[in-house]
Image 1 (spheres, rainbow, N blue to C red):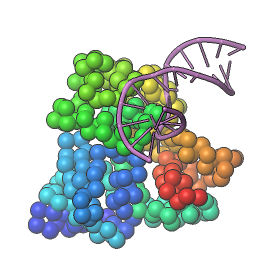
Image 2: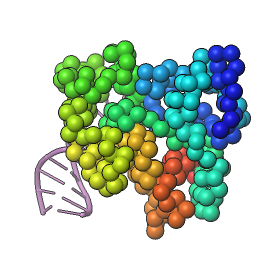
Image 3: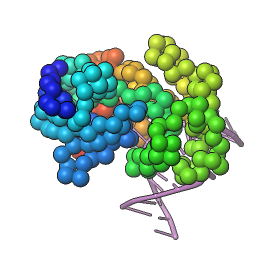
Image 4: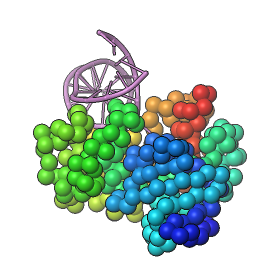
Length: 266
DNA sequence: TTCCAGGCGTATC
DNA sequence: GATACGCATGGA
């Protein structure tokens, strides 16, 4: 990882990063493209960021070195060598094509609670609508609400979210996390199957949502969310399962595959 | 108007 | 354990 300070900004040099591929691929829901197309603005927890750039050079505006090293370095997973991962994946022809198609994707290290909320809202929903619900949620509070704040809500008091049948699910999630019945931090350490079972005790959290929370919110790269797109791709390209070169990072392979089959038209 | 969206809970077999 | 169906809301 190479960077330098430039006035109030941080300049980041990173060849394996494309902003739209990473921030606008359906793994995060709080980023919007700038009007001039130069980059994105968005939030991680209570941190606001404007980031611009392309072709290996990026500018994080109004960012101190300590925020960069303490927050964004981790969020953008800058200590992982994606070139090495893509080299590994290139042993498989389909994955090789997917990596060449969107080689600037990275797995964001998001917050567990925010990921849980986001993916509870994702069930039978569109990415656009998920973003609108999340936006109404944090604008209502002025920040992203904690589990305790949401645990005090009712289906009626959440009607402004217009999230439909998912309101009762989000309240159940908030209660179980706030009361410690589900400890998100503990899920980072538990065996994968146990962590998954723990999450599925929450109403509205099934196999797909729990895998998304584990992967996008809790850095469990072995989690492999299977949605309708991935299901089609698996039966078509991998009837006998994923190739050996993805072992331990199945979730990152899923990012490349998901984007490729959605966007490439293959 | 009708159909579907990064699923899940429930009923039924 | 498999399969069918309903579900709130918004956009195409």
